[in-house]
Every structure is written in structure tokens, then in C-alpha cells.
Length: 100
Image (cartoon, rainbow, N blue to C red; front, side, top):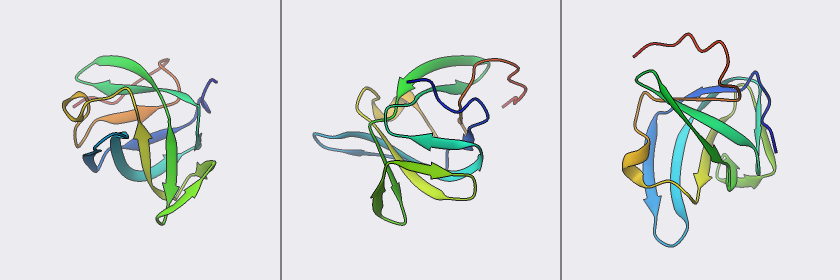
């Protein structure tokens, strides 16, 4: 499912949960994020798509989170080294202006 094109979040922390996947944490700067959304990881001028497997807000499982929420997003297809602190998650690969 396509993500909210206005979604944007800078990664604060990354950790793995054995048997579940990789979790990234951060505060949603704009837009919304939900389970099943396909989003982009932007790093060093490159991007890659991933699908959100789970979302937690204040340690409670949620279907969707919105701007201002501090979240943990689970990705089954990522390894811990695939994303790092400072990378940006976005809902669109278009008009990406962030630079490392």
C-alpha cells in the first residue's frame, strides 16, 4: 500500500528483535505512517523501498501513527546495518531535498 506522500521521519535509533526484524525509532515530522505502507529510506543520496510490518506509539501497537508521535516502526525485510541513525524515512521518493 502506498504511504502518505507527506510522511517524513529522521531515524533516531535502530535495533533488531530476533525473529521479528529491525526496529527504527524516531518522531514523525510530517504525515502519517501505518502498517503495510511502502516507504523510502533515504541515505547518502540513495533510496530504497521497504514495507512497514508494525508500528508502536508509546509502547502500544497501533495501526497508524501521525505527525508528532514518537514511534517504533518494525521492518521484517531489513537488517540492522541497512538503516542507521540520521537516515530519513519518507512517503515519497519525489522532490527529496535532505542532504547528509
